[in-house]
Amino acid sequence: MIDELTKIFFAIKQTKIFIIKKIIITIIISKKINKDNNELNFKKTYKILRLDNNTNFLTIKRAYYKLVSKYHPDKLISKKYSLK
Image (cartoon, rainbow, N blue to C red):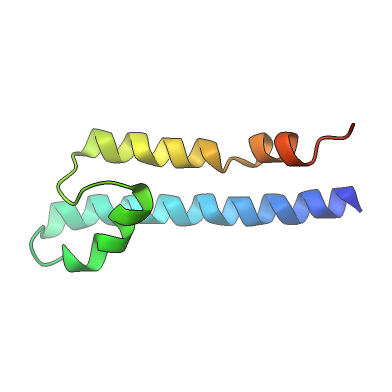
């Protein structure tokens, strides 16, 4: 039972990490292509990362790694599903 829950939990967290990676890539590409036209499309992305719209690349990268570490499966499994 715990192994099945761990697998499900891991799959969910991997999906969240994948989505966060896609968001970061989208932000970077949009900034390079056309900053003015893409501003409205990516407000939610910046909101998820808790950043301003005119944030530089290094700040975006730091916010991304912070979220990835927060939702990393190994950390979450050890906190919530540790066997006592």
